[in-house]
Length: 111
Image (cartoon, rainbow, N blue to C red; front, top):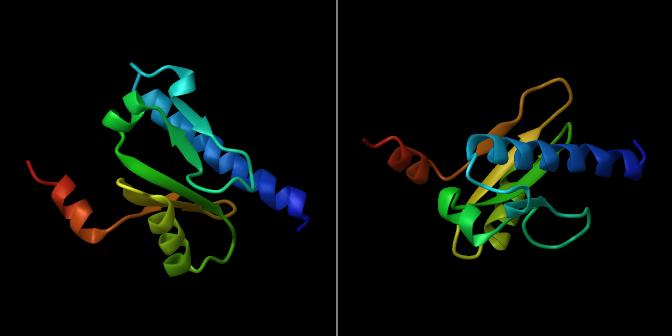
C-alpha cells in the first residue's frame, strides 16, 4: 500500500470518530472536535474544553490490518496528558473497536 493510501485510511477513521462524537453530543459545534492532520504529533482528535467536559478521553486512531495493540495503546497513553487514553482501531471490512483501561471501563458501568 502506498503511504498516501495508508494516511488516507487513518484520516478516514479520525473523521469517523470526529463525526461520531459530534453526532452523539448535539450541543457541540463542529469546531469543538477536529481531526488532526496526518503526521502531526499528539492526539489524533483534538477536543475543545467544552467537548473535553463531555468526552474526557484522549483519542489515538489506528487503521491498519496488523496492529501491535500494546504499542498503539502506549502511544495513546503518551499523548493523553491528564485524560483517559482511548485507542480506536479498525481494519478493512471490520467495525472499529475501542481499547481502554479495564478498570476505567468497569467504573463506567457503575450505576
